[in-house]
Length: 394
View (tube, rainbow, N blue to C red):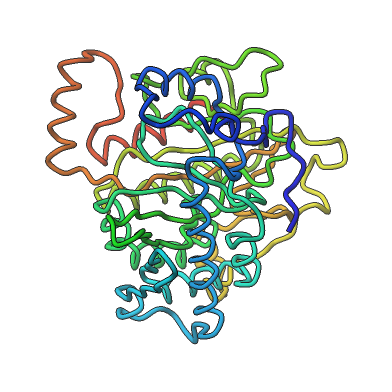
């Protein structure tokens, strides 16, 4: 599948590392790395010569084989307890790829109408992954499939354990609310090279897809400490994800879809609060609609997610908070207002409010008096994000 043409903010350039192969890692000091990252934020092909090229080639080969297993043994029904706990390790030349809860994720992909052949083709060796260098403070590495449809992120072992522990309830939530804004998690894997330490990574649908006409991107947490990103100069090719303080004075104009959005945010954040989870983000992007795309006309169809056998009564349908979905790829994360298309999704669902976060909350309370910061109780976090959404929509 060919990658879509990049929009004005999409930089699909050869990796800078490809032209700097003579520079060894031993000469790359911390300051040099920080300056380099700041100067090349954006999206780059992981081509030969990139420091992560070997790793991503292994990921592609491993994911091709892992997906072939689910194609050869498709799910016959909803996942069982054994499906959620299954671990499949496939040995390749020089590396091993582990697939965690493979049958459960295969069933989830199928319930979303995602063909395994398309999933395999996008994540396999058909084209180079794209590295996204972000403004996030996370130590994780971020990748996109070559068609930008799927997002890959490295995760710590503890975060993976949290995701897998919550997976049955996550699947249940998506069954109850098929139009949920929660990011669609599609796979969890481990990669071990030459019997070394395992690297864990997750795969999910990209919220920002298709990217061709997206003009602005935001990561919203509903607070203010460390929530500002220096905007790119006008005309710059940098791909930046801005934050809460960058959004001041702006509004999400959803028109009649606003009530659905507020209700779905309440349902999804209540679920995350029950899991004792915090520090998740509302990802948001804008795209101006063309004249023939505006309004709720023929461009919209009512579609039911296959993960739920359709609601038969108005009461059931209302409880599930269904809506009209745009007849477009990635419809679950797209909401059309009168003038603009919005890409919306809730991501980063693996931070539990345990002892470390409680201590961090106490420290930030002393460090930032009278200011809002991300590390608060799950109940307060959910309520604050919903209040932010209500205050910034019309």
